[in-house]
Each structure stands twice: as structure tokens, then as C-alpha cells.
Image 1 (cartoon, rainbow, N blue to C red):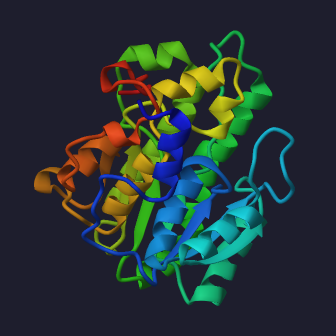
Image 2 (tube, rainbow, N blue to C red):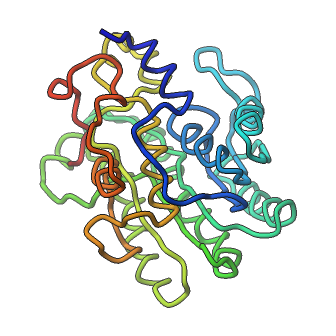
Length: 298
């Protein structure tokens, strides 16, 4: 059996079942977060095409428990074949976001894609959640997504490939999701409402707006550092499945169901199935497909 380390190494080297039918070569992407995890995987996949990637994240100095800074991420993107502009900034800060958008336009001549990747999580129930954590999730997840999208709109309207992609779930109104972790659900659904609203608002502007969400738990450094995390991620998939799915969405390859190109709440599996992937086992890190941990909100 392939070990989780071997599988992770193969995935990071681009050995996945996804065969791209489009390219992001020359397109400029601005991303919130992205110094590690799913965001970095998405950026790296785009960099292999020759994309320009602006990463704005708070991690300018190494974290004591989590690997990666905006600068090490930029080095990885350049090594993969792209151009990178690392910016230390906070998506909660209006001036930082405005400066990042301005820097992207000045350095690369415009913006084609916004990826709202930055997100905070706390699954506490209502009586247990700390209000500082509540405010953090609202500020990063909802306000940050709205702010970066808002400030990039003038540049996106000038692009022939304008796209906003937000890592947020379908708006599933089954009461169990609100009942399990109301504060977090409100924050993630706020991101998804931004997708819903902007897709309608921008329908005549040539800017596509979509959300993307994984069907299963995804291996990240944050999960590995949780109690029992090393065992938990064996029932996860690598972040490269989200990278491939994001690539397929952003290149417009085989829209699932042949539907509209905007206002969708995609899952990684449905996107990749439409792109021709039939076997998802290569994305997994050890567990059989029927023992993977499903993600929430689905």
C-alpha cells in the first residue's frame, strides 16, 4: 500500500489524474492567504501554467507550529514556473487590501482572478464560542471576502477573463449545519452569499463569480497540528484535488452539467468528473475511498 507520505509527495509533484484542457498562462491572480495549505496548492497549480500570483497574507515571519510564509510561498511559485508578488497584509485592513490590489495592477498590468482563500474556523457551539473568535471569523471570512472582491472589481471588469472564486460551501439550509456550529456556519455562509449576490450583480459585466468546496476533509498543516491530527489526515485527500478543481473552474473547462459559468457552488468532485477524472483514489492519503471523512455543509 502507498504510504500517506508517498502519496503526498506524488501529489505535490503534480502527479494527479486531472488532465487540463485550458491554461492560466499570463493571467494575474490575487489571493488572500495562500502561504500554505489549499491556497498555496491552488497558486502552485496556476504557477505551473505561468500565471502571475499576488499573495497577501499575514505570515511574514515563520509561525512556531505552521510551516510557510508569504515569502517561502513566492519562492515555491517561481520555482513552479510562475511569477509571484508576496505581500504581508491583513485582509481585515482596508488599507492593506487596497494596497495589494494597487500593487497587483502596477506590477502585472491588471487582475484577472480573485481567490478568496483566507478563512478562520471555530466549531464551538453558541454558549462556548468566544466573541473575539466570532468577530475574527466575521471579519476574515465575510468582510475580507467582500472587501477584496469589491476593491478588485474595476480591474476585473477590464479583464477578458474576470473571475472571483471563493472557497466556501453551498448554501445548504438544512438546520443541522446551523445547529452544529452556528458562528462558523454564519461566517462561511456569508462568504457564499457574497458569491450569490456578486454573480447576480455582475452578470452583465463579464465577470464570473463562483464558490468551490471539497467533498472530503483536506490535509493541511493546521489539521496535522490538532490533537490526533496525524491520524486524522490519513482519512483525508491532499489539497491538490482542490487545486485541480480550481484550475478547471478558472479555465472554464467542461462546466459541470453545461450550466452557466457564474453563480455556482461547485464541489471538487463534480468539477473534476466533468473534466474527465473518474478515479479520485490518487488524491487520497491512505484511507480507502469509502472511509474518507466527508466535509461539512454537504
